Length: 131
Image: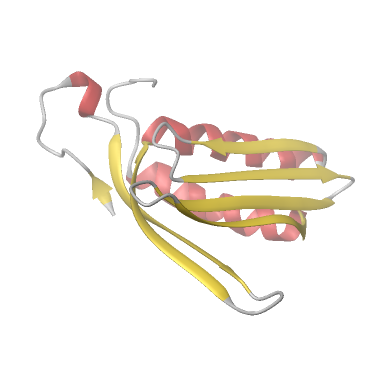
């Protein structure tokens, strides 16, 4: 959604983004979660690089891990096909929606890469802070 502290002079706050994560699953039943959260620009840039490597090599693993722990994703490919797992967590109440081992392939990751490119280009890392 945007930088959490757009006008800050505090180095450690330059790279925080206000964001929203959404996760849904339709098997069995129908479940969805939408959670406001904070994420570091470097976390998204790192995940983008890992996905780019998967798209290029068609094998390996990409992991989104965040400092706040409210969202996470793991993608594993072998020969262009594989599995994705992820979660969205509400920290205060501890509620969590998780999907595990859903089938995916490189065609889905190409779209994810384009979307992450747009985010990383719109919100570049400003301070280089790593949590």
